[in-house]
Amino acid sequence: MSIHPNIEKASWLIGKFRGEGGKGEYPTIPPFTYTEEIDFTAGPPSKPFIHYQQKTWNSKGEPLHTESGYLRFPANGTIEFVNSEPTGVTEIYQGTLTTPHTLTLKLTSIARTPTAKSPNTKDVVRVFEFNPTTQTIHSTMDMATDTTPTLTRHLEITLVKK
Image 1: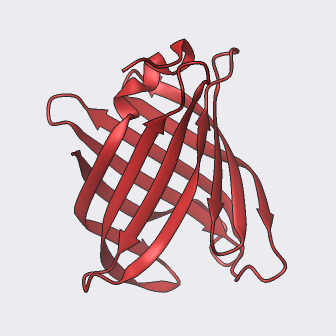
Image 2 (image 1 turned 120 degrees about the horizontal axis):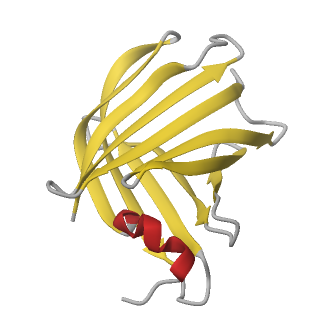
């Protein structure tokens, strides 16, 4: 598979990953478990991006959440993540490879439609940590909202590359 040179450093992301037994929690909701699937697809070799498609299901197999976006790898060496959710929220993140196999993304901008539900998200940090031996990604998401103003763990799961 041929990929753009700018995304080679994060090529470990490319593929479909699935995990079960994810832990969801937050001070304003009851704890829950979930299954998650993430598909990272490289753009054409002439384009420095990876398409991101994410879906989750509850323990009964019912859909919970989905989102889609792009990881962008501009020539300046940064990583940008543009993400859209059907809840009426679009997020922009700035990212770095904090280790060769760990991508950390920090929210820098958020936009909401007039009907996006509250409480409003104020800050998010997402981490994807790849283990090349087990071919797994450990994913975490910490967020702050209007009602919980400090970054607090919301989601955590380990996904296996398919």
